[in-house]
Length: 215
Ligand code: C5P
Image 1 (tube, rainbow, N blue to C red):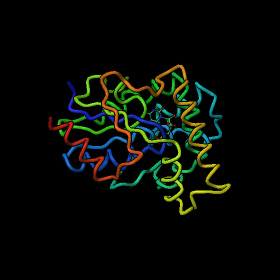
Image 2: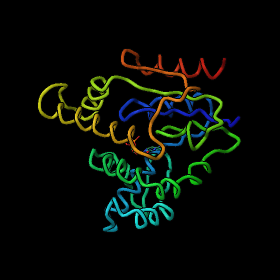
Image 3: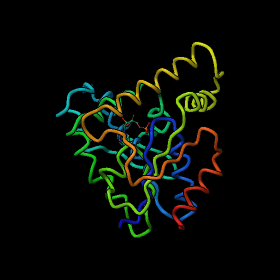
């Protein structure tokens, strides 16, 4: 087995928060694999390459000048920590993530995050493709309504009204694309623990993961 905790789940399920806290608790490194797809989408946009140009985007992904340092994300030296978090780039990430050549270009880069320290990886295919021999696999989810509410709060928006309905629709659209695509679709693996956090807080969720790990 690999010294990896693989946390997969739909958008806005809290994977980033949970995965980074579990990593900190165990002294493991943390891989935010979605950031690589977001960076690829942003890089393509900056370079004037269309998101559906498979060869063009894959070439950019292969040579992605990305650096993760003290909680910040840099692209070609520029701090893009906030620029990669928009819904538009989320959709772009979801678009480029459907291209097999792009996924192939990012495969080894993700595996290289694993050292003897151990790794917590979050994404859609951590347990299925990147680290199939992970010592613990988790399918982290929550209802679309709850995920949209968390996203709205993050953005300082009310949990009702036109803006909220758009957040909810964006989340559902991205889940649909990520679950139905041909390559590395988001699925709940038979060997993954199901963790539905619709009615759970952060501390409780982190504790649950650590309990499974220590078992
Ligand atoms: O998790 P996050 O919202 O940052 O991911 C952005 C997009 O990147 C997802 O909607 C998904 O399409 C893609 N992705 C992926 N495989 C991963 C991580 C993210 O396809 N391991």
